[in-house]
Length: 195
Image (cartoon, rainbow, N blue to C red; front, top):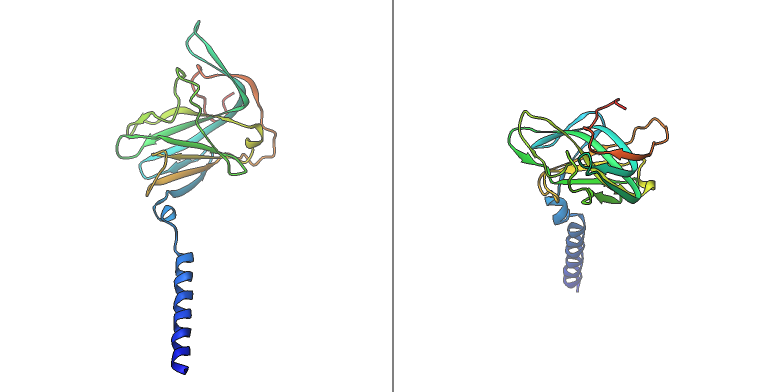
């Protein structure tokens, strides 16, 4: 009888250990997922194959783009978020394909696909080593997702075993964010401190 109780106790302990191991082992997505690299707006953040420096964040209700005489305008039900950034390849030619705006609630927004014909837009541009490229990431977001946001940039749209840059866009100065009525994407992207 004592032998059977000892065997039963050993089986219960083994089952509990297996359950504990199953619950504490990271998931496949966690094991193969992106490698986060954090940074802040205004400083260069380095991924495995490229670097990003966020130069400016602007908001507008309407975007204008195209060549003189052939201008297009796009309105949105929320706000256009325009992130001007400088990207550079590190050691080899690279195309940055993944970019998302992550709002303060954790909701993510992909770059807008309604701006065909606008110049200097990321993602999708090919980067060459030694030649930094300044361009824009453009998102359509609700107004309540402007403050406390994070720009997420990666080489692949769904990175695995690769860097995922998480760049804080929060100014932290307590000033209200300005929303322009119209922003012209035909003008070259500006840097920090430029009007």
